[in-house]
Image (spheres, rainbow, N blue to C red):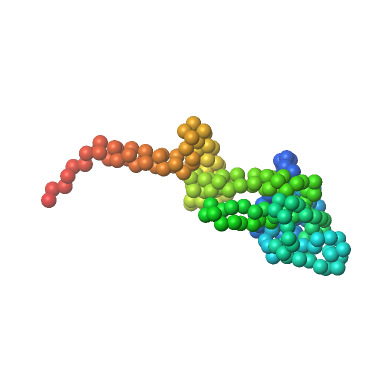
Length: 208
């Protein structure tokens, strides 16, 4: 699926230079595919137990080390050779502070050996914009609550969810409220309208 989506993007002539993805898609096969087949660059995160060689000689001799063992300076790229990848990569160690005050470490590799540490981190950070989009599309525009069974009805539901997301984005710009706050206000307004309509009906009380 990952490769199919990228290949379709290239086929549709969608302009992009870097492929960005989370750690689950950072396989050697995907790296080779992006660089060698699609002729694109990538920035991907690595697990600490992935194996790298720190020189061509070390690679030829099969002397690989875990990514988290070399003494890397934060944000200082190092040229490495990842096991299973046919070309050199830049590896950078990113240290950050979590919301709870704890310290986290992320290892990033890129096929673009002209980048600097901050450039690698900045490019990869752009991937985060996709996460809130997917979250809001599913939870606020009801993409994941589709009862459809056929391709046509599924396509219609997906299109309707996209329209809902776009309208939330427009409201967000006007009201300065995020999608979840807007959904709560709309839901509350709908309940109030339903309650007002019920009161107008004035149902006849049942006799005991």
